[in-house]
Length: 121
Image 1 (spheres, one colour):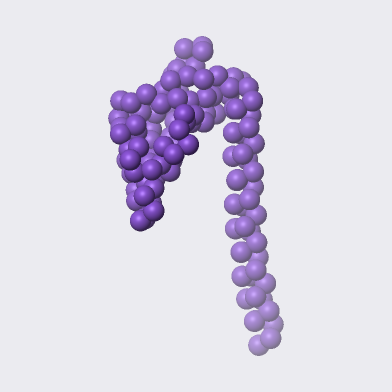
Image 2 (cartoon, rainbow, N blue to C red):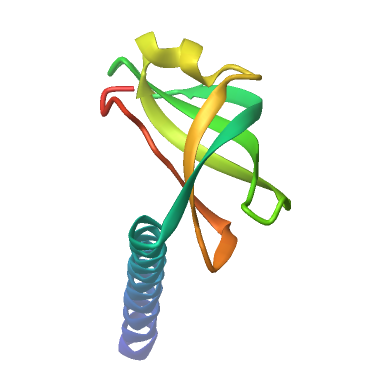
């Protein structure tokens, strides 16, 4: 009986550690990509092609999921998708057809970040 409880304990700990390490690695990769884009990026205006929201609870914050397109310096058109947390009063800036300030990596235009001029929107 002791062996089974030890096995269950080790399995649960392994699953928790795996989840924690996976999340930490994904976060590290995302931050590295964002630093690369900010360091050697090209600013461009994109266009929102689809926008939908999901509630952020009662905090006055909305999670906006946007699909967008933009053209790189070489004329190639790219599409992207981002989820952005914004104040609910800023929702009009994220409607379909609105322009969106973006920065993409010069050496890989598919890597893109959203540029905001107002940290509260």
